[in-house]
Every structure is written in C-alpha cells, then in structure tokens.
Image (cartoon, rainbow, N blue to C red; front, side):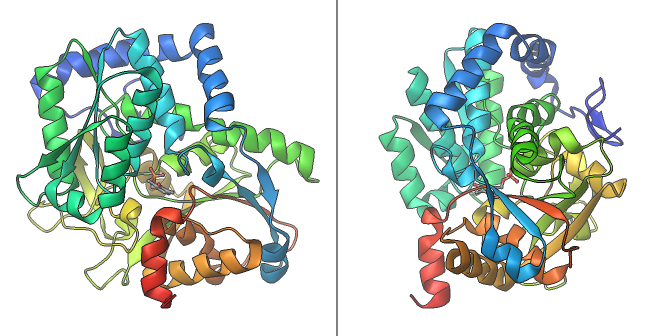
Length: 392
Ligand SMILES: *Cc1c(COP(=O)(O)O)cnc(C)c1O
C-alpha cells in the first residue's frame, strides 16, 4: 500500500518522466536492478562491505538522558558512526556493486552540499573506478572542504556554470553526461529521488537501517517493535531507510521532519509538504515547491542537506495518504536541538539530523512509547556553522 508498485508509483507519485534519449539507460537499470540486487552473490558482497568497510551494524543506543528529559523511551540509530559519517554510503556501496554487475566502467554523480559526492568518490576509490562529480560553481565555492575530500579520493569535480550554478544545474550536466555515455557509465543518485527505479533502489539499499532496528530492538527493549520511527527528510533516503520495514505495519507511527528554514511562511523555507504542489522534478512526479507558473522556487535551510525543493515520491505518498505525520522545524529550533543532544549525550549531530531531535519540543509522547530516531550523520562537517551560530 505504501511501497512502490510494479509501475514505479507510490500512490499517484513517482514514475519515470524522462527525455527520450535517457530511456535506454533507465530501462536497462529498471530491467536489471531487482534481479541483480536480490541475487545471493550480490547480497553476500553487499553485506560483507557494509560490515567490514562501513562498520555495520551501527549501534541502536538507548538515550537515557534525553529519555528522562522528555519522559519517553528514546533510541538512537547511530548512522553517524558509518564510515564517512552518515548513512549515504549504504546507498553508494549498493549502487557501485550494481554498476559493476551491469558491466559499467565509469561512475558519475551530482552533488549539492558535497556529501553525496564524497560518499560516491569514496566507493569509487574503493573499487578503483573513475569518478566524475558534477557540482554547481557556486556550491564548489561554498563547500570547499568537501571538494577537497572528493579530489583527495581521486574524483574529478566538474563545475556546472549554467543557470543558478547550484544543484539543479549540476543535475542537468550529469544527465547530459549519462545520455552521451549510455554503455559504460552508471549515474549514482544520492537520495530516494529521480525516475523509477532510483527511489525504490535507494530505499532498498537504505532499508538495512530498519532491518537492524527491528532485530536490535527485540534484543534491547521490552517491545518487539517501535511505537514511532522518526527521521529528517531532505530527499528522504535516511527516512526511507528507517521506515522501510515498518511501512505496512500501521501500529508503528511514522514521523517525517522537514526544514522550515526561517519559518514556513517567510519565503525562506524547505518544508516541501507544507509549501509544495504536485509537479515533476528529476524525472519523478512528486510534491514540489513552485510558483504559480510552475517554476521551481529556491528552497532555504541552514542545513545544506535539507535544502531541496522536492521530496521523494514515497514521502509525497506518505504525506498525501496521511500514513506519516509531517512536522517542520526552524533553523533556530534545529540548532538548539543539536546543542542539547551534544550536551546531554556527548553526540554532536549533523544539522540535518538535529532537525529530527527538535520534534520533542513540538510534540508529546507517552512515557511508555518507544521512539527510534535516525541519527543520520555526525556534525564535524557543520562545525563552522555551529561556531558562528553559538559564538564558540
Ligand atoms: C544528505 C543528508 C541528509 C538528507 O538526505 P536524505 O536523503 O533526506 O536522507 C540527512 N542527514 C545527513 C547527515 C545527510 O548527510
């Protein structure tokens, strides 16, 4: 009901709305991704790398002090402890293995804040595959440390100089590259966005998160399943990962946290479910922030990873069907929540992740509720923003 159907739709959202010239590439992927990723060989290699290279399973940690403060049972799924510091590598490992099995020799990706570029460059170094990362010229200036990381990992970073010189322009360049190199190149998309089968493929690779939660919770708590799973949503991959095995079990509440930026009605926001209407972005029908003429409006959030004008089609459907509760959190509330987690548990979260923790100020839970939060990434990359904000 809530997962993708055989046509690539989540309810009315999803599909593959792509230019004719891209069709052979997407068709090849669609026809092969399940056969390959569900094969025994693939699963063995995937889980071996997740264990030995990424460091999985990541711990499920009962957050004693946060639980005391908010009078409910809070568990943290520690994706911040993955190699490279966030969940994104679960997906890039899966996709590069798939690319190899398809006989591809070259990897491309686009990146905005640089996190997906780093996760992609990492697995290309691991596999010895050439890697080209497209990035808006403005983002290259704004995200210098991540550009340096990608270069150090052996990737070629290509500046997109057209349009607003940000993520959307980098995406256009990557699509052009893929159209020109259909035989030997795989395009690694970094979230549950893009044309079918990308959202489903990425969700499946990230679903290792909810599979681990299910097992760990049985061992560690008095309940066999959570009352709520909770995550921040940019494109929606870390959220899809922690929701995945609970989607059809409506006894498990699903909470999605979006970035309100300076406030939902200030014009500087990224709260797509509140501000978006149906539209097409990156080949997928979904909720999209746009003006009356259908032009995509620039999103804003203090966190670069949530600064995206759409959401994945799975999340658009979870919103429209009311399966998930959507909450939006301002920059200020997220920064305070990041501070609080650091002080109460000794964990400095990524600012994306900090948004999820701000929920406890917005919403009450029962004392017996088990709430599992996806701690999607660590805050090292955001230290400059924390320093400026808190005058450290
Ligand atoms: C990229 C990123 C996000 C947002 O992406 P999703 O696809 O929505 O998960 C969230 N948290 C961290 C730490 C990230 O790096």
